[in-house]
Amino acid sequence: MKRFTPILALVAVCWAVFLVNHVMLRGALTTHGVVPRHLASLPGILWSPFLHVSLAHLMANTLPLLILGGIICARSKAQFIGVTMTGILLGGLLVWLFARNADHVGASGLVFCYFGFTVARAWFDRTILDFGLALICMVGYGGILFGLLPVVPGVSWEAHLAGLLAGVVSARVISNAGRKETPGALPGFKKAG
Image 1 (spheres, rainbow, N blue to C red):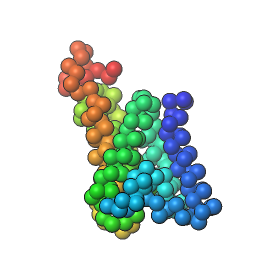
Image 2 (cartoon, rainbow, N blue to C red):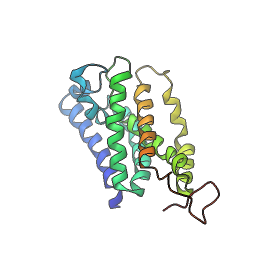
Image 3 (tube, rainbow, N blue to C red):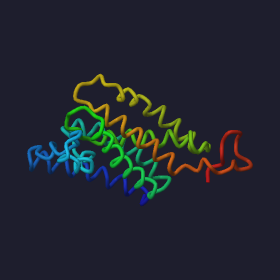
């Protein structure tokens, strides 16, 4: 159970910030997300994943965070922390640089980061374990890819895309694709190690 402490802590922080923001501060913190190309909003890169505009917004992110983040935690707490930091920093920076002018908040960028990381690991590492986890993610959460389309007003598809890209970058960076295939692995796959 200790392995899942980081994702449980991250979700707990999201809920604590939500309660403080909406119960005590009447939503005042929500304006501190990422506003693209505004220097004053650069700190929002760090805060935006923890800010949510409504209870429905937070609830929509909670279960995917727990499941997809839990998959990464199950493999390695250090890996989870690295992927999360890349998702927050790289994803947030991409939103700040390229997104439309709006206040971008919410943990959905991290959800897409975890999804992108888990699926991309199957491509880069080609182990049976990674393939199985990617298949589970695609079956369970493949529908989130519709969130990459700019069709729902008020939804930051840019944060979704930035998070997905950050997840793929994370997978590539920690990939062991350069290792030679292990004898006994299925053709085209490396033995999980």
